[in-house]
Image (cartoon, rainbow, N blue to C red; front, side, top):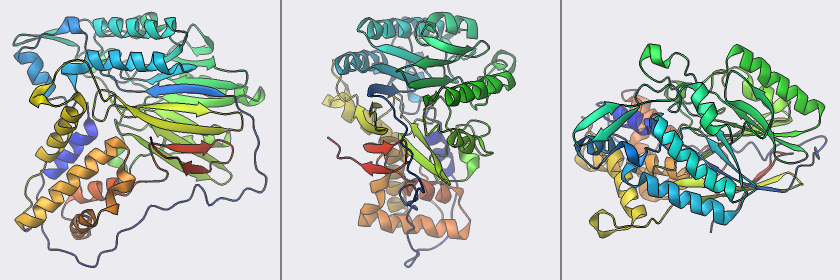
Length: 462
């Protein structure tokens, strides 16, 4: 689910009081990653690799619904997930991967809508097509994928409980996409190491909490490492250090925060330990990059720890506008060039006589706009400006274009209106919107990062 949008909508339903501030300053995110001076520049060698990353597909099998009232209600409540076009989106993505011919494809979880067994079986068939084209596929589960008691079918006006998958069943269905190539694996979780080149390991960590879902009667959203899994994780890191291997880390949950907001709002998206030393520990072991998902935003966050650093690169949901995925090119000299692509066209006709991408964009903007209620004590004109700004911020956050929000003069004016509300402390929405409108370093869509130094530069988007 597009949970961060839900948070914004809930916050937008609260009342605020105040008047317009004319002189409030607009802060800028600090640029720290490129201001570091190494005493000795590290020169670890990587490998020439091209790989693709996608996340949060939330696929529902075509065998589990018809376009009746039950499915209509599901789509209307799914916060922008384009479920009517879900199978076509997956088909188009599969074609794009095969045409691109990367060395491997990394999927960072939430493969299915709610862990339906049939959805998993259908998804695995698509991954077989990719592997048959000579492309290795490495999969992780997300919090929606295992022991999900919300698994349902949707026919006519009825929902019906359907089979979900256990950890063992998930491992059986997806064993060909990671475990079979692994050189090390954790037997209690879907965590493993794949040697993607002579000197690069792909360490895929199952960060989900699903053992108690059936008892709880709901799927847990947060993430953490189990005790023995953490011991295995540490063993892998030390072995990589011993063998002088470079490590690319993948997990569903985020390792670094992707907005400058109160940690309360991001707690369900972060892995436990991310605020108590885990990122710094990884950086100290020369693990400098983690690919994640879960939050549905398209963002890159970076943090330095003296001479060490870590980047968390999260990829937006393929099922939600703007349907982002990433193409990554790693070179021997440690440059990681990351570009963003989108699913923009599908076969078939869509509502309103417009194309899929424009229709999806309209849906996304309509959802975030619906969340705004006129605040008390604010003029209708100012309320409209604040609503439009909140709408732009929410969608830019998912597009990966939030670094451009405050380039517009009108947006700056609306920012100041929200800033006043934050100063008054009368509206929690304000902190959320202000925090999301100031993009944290670095840029999010087109970037080159050196994994030895942590220095980054923006590259021109096609």
